[in-house]
Image 1 (cartoon, helix red, strand yellow):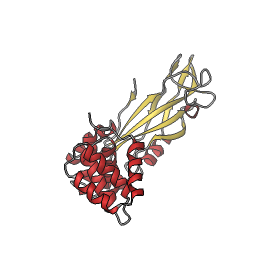
Image 2 (spheres, one colour):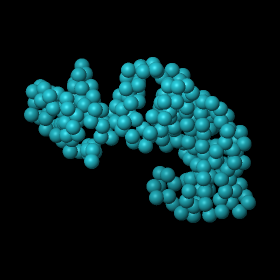
Image 3 (cartoon, helix red, strand yellow):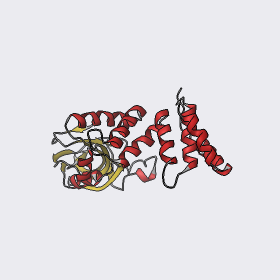
Image 4 (tube, helix red, strand yellow):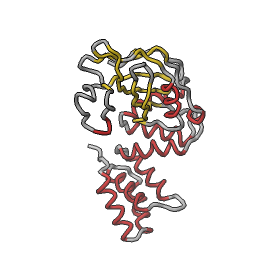
Length: 256
């Protein structure tokens, strides 16, 4: 079970003691994820560390202004003296929040993990959940939770919120990120909108637009056929072939 402890209003933190045996006893399946010599993972008599001083992370100003929130995950080694080290971001969140999480975790103090009663270094995962409070923020938090699980509808709704500035400052970068995720998760409307976006840039990407319009048409988006026909008239045979190649190589799912 994750270790949980009280936090301030702006960020929730969960410690997840990584499973498996000591890095000395058995290597991890991925060598890059294997702990350093002398660093354990939870199990085989190794008890998790206990947090005793955990100042809360702060929001970065860009994320606060954009009402941007979510969860970043860190890999951390809690040394035998209870101090964090070797902090790495394994699931980034962006907009300066990863840096804020690392900065906070670096200042934490722990009762160290123990093996056979002796303090040892332990590798753990730390989930830092950045959450703002307010009606719009609570809506975004709920949608973000669903989007993390690959919910295309939630991703599409988040893209609209940020692209239109619906209750939050307009942010095209965040909006387009969520729009592309929704398109890749099979949303026909998101695929159609990605087609329009990529075809209407100053330097349009016709093969990308062709891919998105084609997928949207196959998924039943009613306006995509006309848009695809209009786009194809502007494209060279080589660009059409490039678009077909994108469709076959991206393996973007079709609805069942």
